[in-house]
Amino acid sequence: MGRWRLISVVVAVLCLVPWPAPAQTRSRSHTVRHSVVARSRLAMSPTALSFPSADPDAVPLVPAAGGALVITVKASVAPGDPVTLTVVANDDLRSGLDAIPASALQWTASGTGFNPSGTMSTTVPQAVGSWTGSGSFSGQQSYVLVNSWSYPTGSYSATLTYTLTTP
Amino acid sequence: MNRGPVPRRGVRVLGPGLALAVAFLLAPAAPAAAQVSLSLSANTVTFPTADPDSTPVIAAPPFTLTVRARRATSWQVTVIASGNLTSGASAIPITSLSWTISPNPPFQDGTMSSTVAQLVGADTQELNPALDATVNYFLVNSWTYDVGNYSVTITYTLTAI
Image (cartoon, rainbow over all chains, first blue to last red; front, top):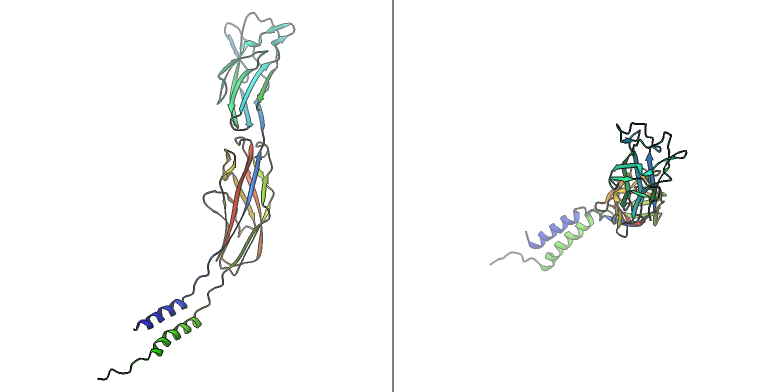
């Protein structure tokens, strides 16, 4: 077969082969936006503590009935911003004119960022926990009351105020 | 000495040319290229701010994706993100962004990626006239997100053959 004839056959075959159409593409873009604003939330349960009567000799530290407080702190803040939780008593535990010092309330705590222990104050808010940055943090705080023969008979109460602080 | 007939130069040139001409005439017409178009009704889609407890998943206002693929034998739409949603050094994982789309099929719901283009829809026939698809974006909300103004670029690509 001559050279020209060979070329002719090859070209003819190539021409007879159907060529696929080229793929066509189109692209479009848009922007998705979302703003995260600062917000925080404090939740705890239960909202009341009670300490049963107990013999000071047999039970020098009276645990709160009902077990530990379950505390959840949630905060959306700027990167590196501090998140703190404090507690303060409005007064000593009062029963009429009688009082049990607020410092008789002590606690231990567990959970990431929670201080492991503390003592109540009526003047200086006590740190319960501290964190850095956004997140949701849960822990347990278990109160005990230092028992004493010196306490006059009565029904004592005080209000504890928890404060969650973010920038 | 008889060497036989000497081929004439004109015949040697005419032969291949004639073959080519016949081949072109007999060649099946190449299929016409598909004509495609794609548009998004919104240049920006904005999620409202929301409390993660009351709104664990935030819905954005819907937008319309319009696609057309005339003279196509198959088509597909994919989507990919430029990265995570970012605000300075803070980021929300792009996998927190998902979508629902209708009609479904030929379109399908999915979760956004910044590494692998995700299939939004496909079919093996032409798409003509244009088809409007309603797209809803959803963002998983979380207390872990840093305060900030986040954004990301989302790119849709229609490919048709």
